[in-house]
Length: 460
Ligand code: FCB
Image 1 (cartoon, rainbow, N blue to C red):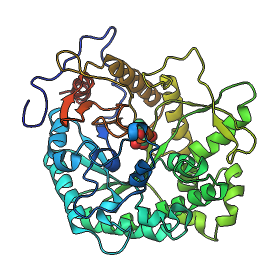
Image 2 (image 1 turned 90 degrees about the vertical axis):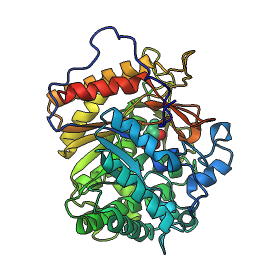
Image 3 (image 1 turned 60 degrees about the vertical axis):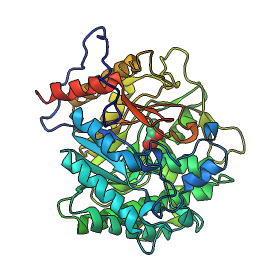
């Protein structure tokens, strides 16, 4: 094993049948190939150097995560970030999207910043830059300080000021070195699952959901203004999870349309177009003040898109808070090892829909495949199914580009296997296998494949 924790000699993939790479000729010369992670899913060191608690620390204590897994150690990235950056550098990755743990830099959510927490991200950003990789900093990937949740979290309109103050701390500290900023990761997902279905709270509430949606949109607008004003030459966006919402059965069309408004439009529409979809506007109105839509609709530079697979929607049982639920997938669709439908054509249609709707440069900031893998007898992870998945999805992206979508970058989820929220550590999305007992890093065959794709795409 080398100093980076890699096993001797990289895993190599047996040749795939058919063409190894999708056609990439349509892509721009400056197309960016990257990888993504998030703070809670990889950092660990949950009680070190003054870090405060996040809502995910509390949720893990509730016993609801598979196998009672927690984020306490995760991938120990807090201590091994140099190894992890070396993994990217050796494979020619051009950009790295990570997130800041808000409670690490502001343990109580606001007030005096925690210097050791800020210093960790100084070290991380400096190491990313020294490796010739562009840092893409996401302010919020779901780890809200518990202290703020105790005050009402996103359901309180005060969160707009909390988030703006946090953005100001980040802009002041890192704005000299970081230029790419995302405000929120997948606001539709953490509001639907955290508030709408009541996952992270004792009870679901329509009011909490609609307040949360509106306040997060306002917080986005406030952070865009702060970053724009304080970081010279910055490039800002938000990251949305867009997937087709398809009816699971013949009677589910209305439920699918309803889901689509929450899943795909409740955030991008007000942020990029200055209006809510009508079905949501009527629900938000009680929480809206004069001038709010203008506060939300601040100019952004790009649209961050996360895409996995379509969701199949059914009408919810009577008494449901939100009016739709998730139904069965059709029998005739191939599935990934974790049961997600493999439908690259849905990726293409999503890219074209985003292009038509918002007319912004698009960066795909998450796409990838989950599995339950273990190393083979040689200690290698030969993940040909992930390679095939990536090839087909990148191929679909390229055909969307040929059809007019202005896609400027593609980031794989994820650099490392990591804490997959409610599923804990069993579910693996990484280009790098993590042996959680030893923290050994084993780059999978897909990471070598990605290296070769990047090389080929850059004409190297
Ligand atoms: C996305 C999340 C990311 C990860 C992937 C698999 O929805 O943004 O943190 O969990 O799914």
